[in-house]
Image (cartoon, rainbow, N blue to C red; front, side):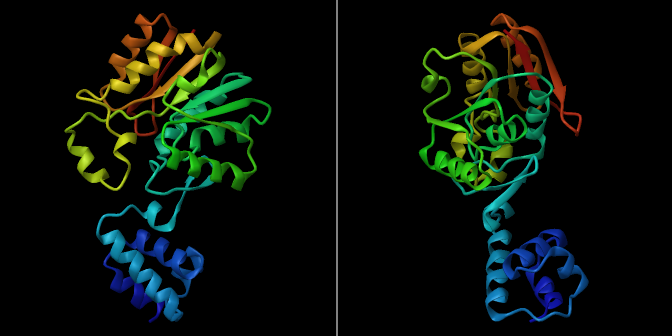
Length: 262
């Protein structure tokens, strides 16, 4: 089977088919485009057709290939972790606009946020907290892969921090309401990384309520949230006594991150 024949048999969107074929064959995506007449080995053909079948059943591409890029880092991902999204890079960008010598990523998942911060602020002490042992194993693997020294702690939200205070708290917590129709399209990803009670604010409330006890004077809290939640999150932060509370939009113009200072 040639590359062109394999792509035709895949019955997938062209970009995804090329990506999966490159992963299955070891060819670059550029060569997949440039040399459609090239013959695939039997092993590559079988691997690609298996990948294509999984994708047609709805499995995300990132889980099929086992990795996803985030802020310039190629991260291993498994069904134990949420797939890092481009909009979450806004949290990194906002964090790097401020000076900090210590930071905590709450609910680190694959380690995306913590590792991106450490890569760009190598002198800072970065702690990553995660309640899922399986997710924490993926995050540790990514840290080793990139040679980044992040301190990983197993536990829920602030529990592993005891009385520690830091300059920066960031989190991309679950924020989808139970029963939200969007959940139907996310069935392959871990529910505990997506669902957040009847109104989607369960974990955001906990994070805002606990932040002041763990921030140094002038320290920042930055939280990702969903469409339509920004006003409520700003209100929570103001009630908690945070200063300079504001919301930033992502590249699509959706209010995506809200933050404030202790």
